[in-house]
Image (cartoon, rainbow, N blue to C red; front, side, top):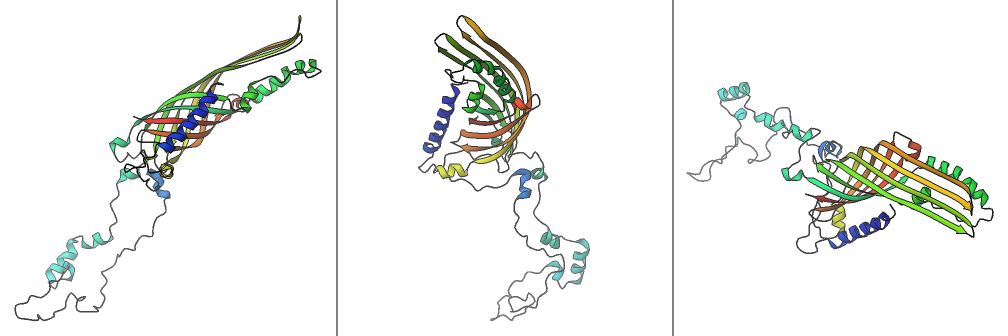
Length: 353
C-alpha cells in the first residue's frame, strides 16, 4: 500500500494540471449552463407566482375609445371605404341561434383560456428517461481510495503484546516500531480500484467496482546484541455496487473558456451502496538478547466483511470524455464495526464511452 501514496499525489497534481490547461481559450470554449434541479427534484425548485386564470364570464368593461368597442359603427370617411374588421366571438354574436348553440355545444373557447400547459406524465415519474438517447452512456472509473479505519481492536492488541518488550528496554534505546496504527496516522491505508457504471436517468447512475491493496511494514532495530524485529503484511480485496444521485444532473462534459466555467459545470451528488470485502493480515515479532529469545508473538487475521456506505461527491468535467470525481463516504460494517468502520476519500478519473 505504501507506493500508492506517491500515486495519490501524482494523480491529484495531474488532475489539477488537466483542469488548468484543458480549458479551451479559443473560440471552441463553452460557457457552463445555470444549475437547475432535474427529475423528481424539480418539485423542490422555487416556483414563480402563476398568473390568475379567469373562470367566470369574460370581462365586459365599458370601452374607453372607439377602438376598444367591438360594436363601434364609425361611419366610413369616404364612399367605398370598408368598415374596420372586428373580431367577434361566437358568444358575442348577435345571431341568437348561433349564440344558443355555442353555449350548448361548448366549442372550447373558454376552456382554452383556463387550461394550463400539457403535462407529460413520464417527466414526473421516478425513473424518467433522459432527454436524448445519447445522454445514456457507460463510463469507466480509475482511481484510489484512502481509508481512515478505526482499528480499535488492533490498538488494544498491540498495546498488550508490545508491553513486555518495552519493559525490557529499560534505557529506551529502541524507537517505537512501525505498526498499522502508524500507517493509519500517515494516511497510508490506500487501495486502488476500477469501476464501470452507467447513466440510467438524467439524475441517477449506478456503479460496479473492484479494488485491492497489498503491502507490508518491517521494523528491525539492533543495539549491541539486542534485536527487535516486527513484520506486518496486509492484503485487502473488495467489490461493491453503488448508486449516485445527482439532484442537479451530471456534470456537463466539454471544454470551457476558463477554470471558473469548468467548476460551474461541475455537479455534486449523493452516493450510497453495499460492499463485500476480504481482509488478510499477519503480524510477527520477537525481542532477543543474543543468544536468548526473550519474547516472540504472532497474529493472523482473515475476515470477510459486509458493509454499506453513504456519502457525497463532486464531479468536475475536464473535456468531452474525461471528468474528475472526488468522493467522501463512511463505511458501516456489520462485523466488528469497532475495528473496520472507516471514513474514505476516493478520487478517480472517469472516462465516458
